Length: 198
Image (cartoon, rainbow, N blue to C red; front, side, top):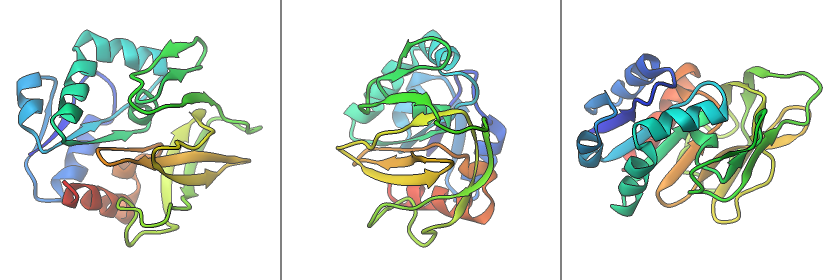
């Protein structure tokens, strides 16, 4: 079973439909007991870093996520669901993230923001997420991102008037800045790759 954490942020129904293409049972929930039973936990996210963190705290989402990791089970963070995994976000105000991954989410050094549309990902070597879809294009919509690589993870990059980290993979935590659920066949393949790794 795959659970998509419902904390009031994210394209929940789009994500649910996309993950359902893997033929796994998919449940959208904020119930920690249901999340505890899941093989994989998906953290979506749309909007501002601070607002998403506030919504996550309201359902004790940090505890749900940390418990999942402590049990040795995998997590996939999407868009702001990626960003809140990091130490801090600097979107309008400085906000504390979950700190599961080390790094700060900062304003992209681009003249035109937000970064909206399809862009290529230069994948890290031996990536699990991008197996068979190396150098494909995915759908982005954001103004903030991770500008420095994560030392303890496999980093993939995207160039938008300067490079930023568009995906990170560790043993249990994978995060992507783009929306795989809105990225056509390549996005569905990435989702399948992650599900098959559980």
